[in-house]
Length: 136
Image (spheres, one colour):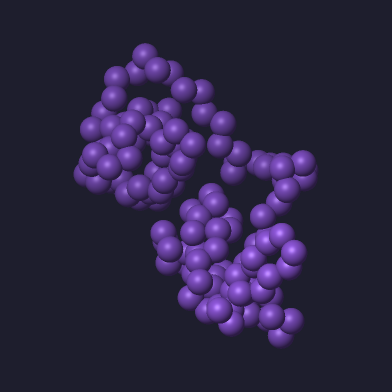
């Protein structure tokens, strides 16, 4: 195959437009699958489109596990004490929720509200965090 480069031990696939690659998505706030939509002049991945939220952004190289992580300052820090004794409320776009509420979602399961802003809530479902709509 012309798109494969090999050396003594491994086979490396040459990336092309439309190929999928995993990278960090700023909208989703997590590692997600992306489609390659452009390359730089040095033939490196430049821009990608998230398969989950359809957001388009620059390609971010995954940090190594030993690399120092950024510190979160101010109101964007999302540390919410989870009280498992609170009852689960069924999620509905017509309901109002506040930080700390536990909700039950038909697709994502049970989660805890970690942030509230105009018409939207941030909800942590296990390791994933989702943005959902709620009543104003």
